[in-house]
Length: 138
Image (cartoon, helix red, strand yellow):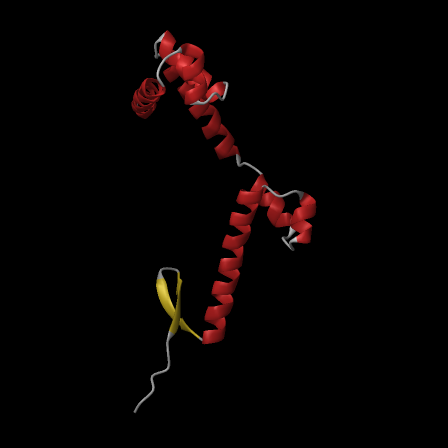
C-alpha cells in the first residue's frame, strides 16, 4: 500500500505554493494569533496594562486603536447625511427616534410614558428606520 504525503500549500500573490508542514503550521499559527488579538481587543476594549498582561505588543494596540483620516472623514460625512435625512422626517417620527436612540429609552418605557401600545411603537420604529435607510441610500 502506497502512502501519499499530505501536501501543504499557501496562497501567495494569487498562486498556490507548496510548503512544508512546519511552515504551514507556523503561518496559520501567526494568522490565528492576529485574528485572536483583533477579536480580543474589540470585545474587551483593553487598557494599556491589560495589553501588557496578555502579551499583546503595545505597537499593535496603538495601531489598532487609531482611526485613519479616511475613517474620520467617512464618519463625519455619514453623520451629516443622517442629520439631513432625519430632518426629512415628520416631527412625531423624529421624536420617536430621539427618544429611542438619543435618550436611550426602551420601547416599553416609551409606551408607558405616552400610552401608545408597545407593538405600535415597535412598528412605527421599524417603518421609520426602513424609510431612513432608503433616504441614506439616495
